[in-house]
Length: 304
Image 1 (tube, rainbow, N blue to C red):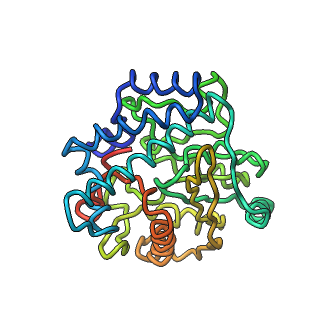
Image 2 (cartoon, rainbow, N blue to C red):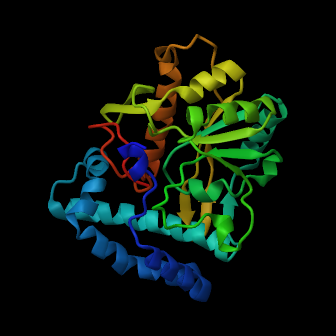
C-alpha cells in the first residue's frame, strides 16, 4: 500500500472523541453535538498542522489578507465539516434527516435509471455526500459506492450505529484493478455506481490534469473511460449541507461519453466539465470543500 492510500480516510479525531460525540447526539440530539463542536474545532484550529491542511484551498478561494482572516476561514470550513459529520452520525443514531431534492431532479435521475444502461454518479468530497448515499432508495436500484475504508478511520458508517445493513455495496478501490470489474458488472446490470471524481487514488499516472481555481488539479479518468465503454450516462451530483439535519441535491445535466479509445487525453473535456461543476459548487458553498491537502501542488490524496 502506498502513502496516499495509508492517509486517505484517516480520522483526525480519536476513537474516544468520536464515541463521545455519538453519546451527545443520543442524549441531546444534533444541537448538543453542534455546541460541543465550537470549542473542539477552535482548539484544533490552533494547531499549525491542522491549519496547513486547508491552507491551499483557503488561500485560493478567499485570498485572506491577514492571519486573523485566514484563521476565521479555517474555523468556518472545519465547523461546517464537523456539522456534516454530526449529521451523518445523527442519521444513523436518530434516524432523522431531511433530504431536499426538487421533484424534477428526482424525475431526471429516475428516467436515467430506467434506461437500463446503469448510471455513474460522480460527486466529490464536498457537502454531505456521506449522508446522501444513504438517502437514494427512491431510485429503486442497487447502488455501489467506490470507497476506501482506512483501518485508521474512527468514524462509523450510518448503518453501523444501529447494527444494520447499508443501503449500498462498497467497492474497494484498493482491490484488484481498482474495483473496475465490480463497477462494470454493476453497470451492465443497470445499477448505480457512485464515486468521488475529485481525487486520484492509486497510480498518479492514471490521472488527467484539469484547471481548477486558477491552477492545475489532477483527477482520475477511469470513470469517463468506463462510461464510454458501457455507454452508461454520467450524472454529476453534489449534496450541500443546508442547516441542521438538512441536505440538498445539486444535479447537473447528464453526460454521455463517446468511446474515443483508451488514451486518457480523449476524456479531458469530460473531466474538465466535472471540475467546472465543482467550481460552481465552491462558489456557492465556499465552506463545504473538504479536500484537506494541497492538490494544486502535488495532486496527492492525503486526508479524509
